[in-house]
Amino acid sequence: MSPAGAPSRLSLHIRQKSYRAASGGRLHVLGEISFALPSGQVAALVGPSGCGKTTLLRIIVGLDRDFEGSVELPPHGRLGVVFQEPRLLPWRTVEQNVRLAAPQADEAALSALFATLGLAEHRRHYPGELSLGLARRVALARAFALKPDLLVLDEPFVSLDAALAARLRAELVELVSRRPVTTLVVTHDIDEAIALADRIILLSPSPARILADVAIPRPRTTRSADELAAIRDKIACSVES
Amino acid sequence: MNLALRLGSVTLLLVAWFAGSHLMGARMLPEPQAVGLAIASEASSGALAFNLAVTLARVVVSFAIAMALGTLLGLAMGRSALFDRIADPWLVALLNLPALVIIVLAYIWAGLTETAAIAAVALNKLPLATVTVREGARALDTTLDEMAAVFRFGRWVRLRHVVLPQLAPYLAAATRSGLSLVWKIVLIVELLGRPNGVGFEIGVAFQLFDVTRILAYAVSFVVVMLAIETFLVQPFERYVSRWRAKPA
Image 1 (cartoon, rainbow over the protein chains, first blue to last red):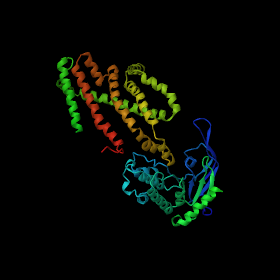
Image 2: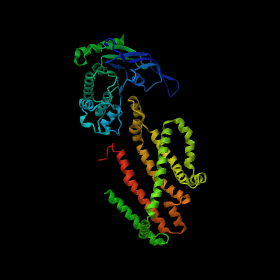
Image 3: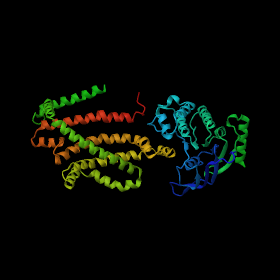
Image 4: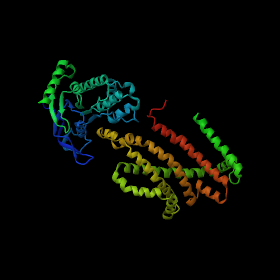
């Protein structure tokens, strides 16, 4: 699916990852996983809860260096991360939280970003004054504001009600289509993955390895219900085979 | 309302003092107005302002040194288990060394100098500041640390926007207990080896059995410290906790 000759933004080769368990012995969490994301691609990592998705993300963003294998990111590339929890600084306002992560962002770009995410009137609020939905929007704004070379999202819409999650998902699609950014989103929700991604990488239960790697035809916004059902069937087939 | 409560509480203290003075006799406990007159006469000669300023300067300098070093040490010990194990016995030793021993040794080793006086006071406060900040450093939120790491916050940004706001309540606690402790130790240092300051004046008054003058200096300095607490420490605490939702 990648445009020919586009440089890859993320290239991952993991041989294995294990933890030392509290009871002694080693806990094998990741098996062999290799894939590369070409520039501008939106990929979804889908797998059952507890399969090691978050561990994989922590390795990719550099928070976990204790594994066998290698991760290649563009040199000096900027990384935008949306964690499962918003992880905002409670003692800084919404705007300060975003500006601290993206000090070079100009006012026009920030205003546009805040407007798209419905945060315009919350710029001076502190995170403690926001609902979870709003706080997650701030976390999205923070990751987008620094114009990342690679955007990584870890279950960004978990524990929101379905309607709100759908709206945020639509906002994310809008942001990504406005300024294409190589994106890796982790989710356990296959429908969310189909709604967001160009490519779905299915992971097995722990220790995770790749079960299937399915490309989805673009464009995201015009997929009909029939097409979505067909994609689901295709994924189901590839899991069984 | 707040001010009225404070004033009422101070009035009650004065009434109790007045009653005590009549019970014990004016020689043992002079009346508040006699102490007030003594403060006025010391103030008009300029001696009060001079001695208060000298003592306050010693308090500020030794407190600043102790807090700065204590914050650095506390952070290091709270974040590194290895450093904590190495430095902990030193900390326990310093915590349990009586203030008087530190002061006397400082004067013997460095002479009756200003440096020895300031160092002795700072050394007395240092372990307490370290222990308090260490608790704060142990409670630092690792999820925010990770956030700062992936967004590549610089060292200074991390310290100022991620670490210090989390340490603020601990620093406020160390400041509060620290200021009152430091000024008490400064007085002993002045009594033992300085030619000026509130402690020196109280030493002279002790030899003359002049309770009025002892109280005049003690009350004046308590007023100064109360002003610092009200106009510096409390507003600072309100400022650093402005982001917390206020109870309605």
